[in-house]
Length: 488
Image (cartoon, rainbow, N blue to C red; front, side, top):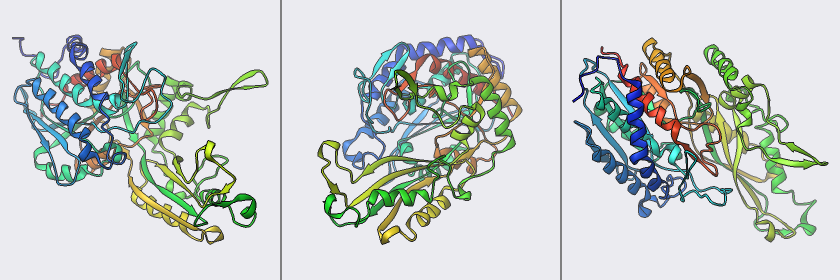
């Protein structure tokens, strides 16, 4: 047996070797099996309970965790009536006077298939190529539970002291985590005094250093529908008299967004960027430069013999970071009422419906935004058309608490040890509803929000991949940060 490692000390090289072996020998294979299961989140599979895919991936993960034989680990699949299940595990403290708890979080539900996958790839057909594991959900966020346990095992391999650790793995995150809060309430006494949250559901600015997420945007979503007729009519007969539902839709959306710039018009959808976040954006822009916007798959086209590339809203790196993390943005993510092109006759369509996704700055209340959005879009409809906005809920964003000195030192030490570069700080444009819940419930906890979703990993889209070399180093970095947890 190895001699006990002194408090707050971990052999980084040995931890990385252990994590690498775990990934190579087992985790990649586990995730390959996981990707093949279409465990779509309830919003995309309302019949999820009958299909059983969420139960399957949860049971598989539970069996794997139990099979690791972590000393003292207790595990339970918790089920509340009518809600998606969660996996909860608990590992007692070892060799430390620390009385507080580390909470490790992840999710196993997935986004839907989407189209545009490379011909030899697909959402449910995993492929491991050049260190990348392709397929839906591996990086977002199926790997989290496996990496979390591998990090604990790296600590155990060195007999490194660690605090009490609990894990909470949900199956509703991609639907806004609407089932999670009841579980947090039900498990509150078992969570303990959480002082550090390890959430591996976020992104990375590059694959060259550890990245800490400092903020997350919120989201308000729903379906906007414009109805002008009860059935389609001949466009030659009616156009010019019957207004197009699409034109009315454009007018209604003009109340919300300046289509020339993309700026959201209501002042209440904006907030001031805190000075600390602005300084971090400036530092991160100096690291990433034009890769901030070049990493996206821009369309190319031929313009008079010269190949052109579609342009971003800004090429200023600082503003680019702020646009995707602290500015509200509207996206239309789905449409209804349109026939396929091959079936599109000369018919004036009776209605147009858009699925709206409104990303909100971290400090804007999502519930209030949903209500304002409904009033703004529905009031005083042009031509007395029937305009309805059916909200599908909202999730308020998150701004990280102040970083404690021990935590900042541990992050930088882990990044230097495994990447040879300091930790980077970056906001993310996506939403992790749990973070706001946990910050409210544990206001003094430090938040290690990290992830493998780096450049071109394309979560939610086609060709999503998990960057395995980065995941190995992140696993070891998590172990090193937990080993630095204060003893008291």
